[in-house]
Structure formats: C-alpha cells, structure tokens
Image 1 (cartoon, rainbow, N blue to C red):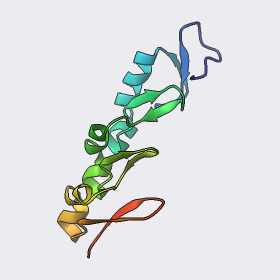
Image 2 (image 1 turned 45 degrees about the vertical axis):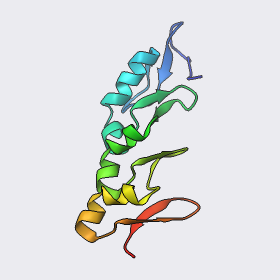
Image 3 (image 1 turned 60 degrees about the vertical axis):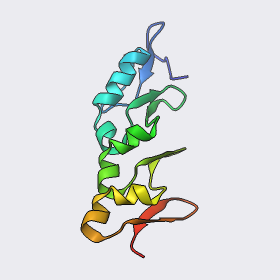
Length: 115
C-alpha cells in the first residue's frame, strides 16, 4: 500500500508526480500521473499503490509515449516500457531516420538495430 504518513484517513501520500508528495485519493493519484511529464514521455500514466509511483499498465500506455515514437519502447514489460519486437522498432524514428528497424534482445533489454 502507499504510505499514509501524515495524511488523513482514506488518503495516501502520493509521490508519483512531480514535486513534493501530496495527500490524495487513488483517483486523484491516477489523475496526477496522467498529468505528469512521465506519462507522455514514458507511458507512466497510472498510480501503483504497491510501488508508490506512476507506472504504465498496458501496451497502449507505452505505444502513446514519446519513448515509443523516438526509440521503439512500445511494449509493456515488468519494469516498464521496452523494445521487444521488430514492430516496436518499425514504428520509431530510429527506423525512419537511421534504418534501425529490427530488434536485438539481450537479457537486460532490447534495442533497435540495423541488420
């Protein structure tokens, strides 16, 4: 659960957005995540109480992000948005501008490369 330290009953201390923590309901925390720069940049648009931070929850969150458009981080994985398949690379600027349209997967991550 998110920390309730210093917050009234029914509220949690929300750290997911920009700036100092605030006391908020789950809905307000989600709205804060949607408004935070990390939503547009990295698809982190939903509040996760267990992690006490904003996270992506679906491939759609990742696909709508700047990370997808720029470097192919279009697929949801356990740790966030990542490059996982050729289709991720093909939709990115790396493919359009540099011809890096194929995925290379390693244990830690994936990246768009030329073959």
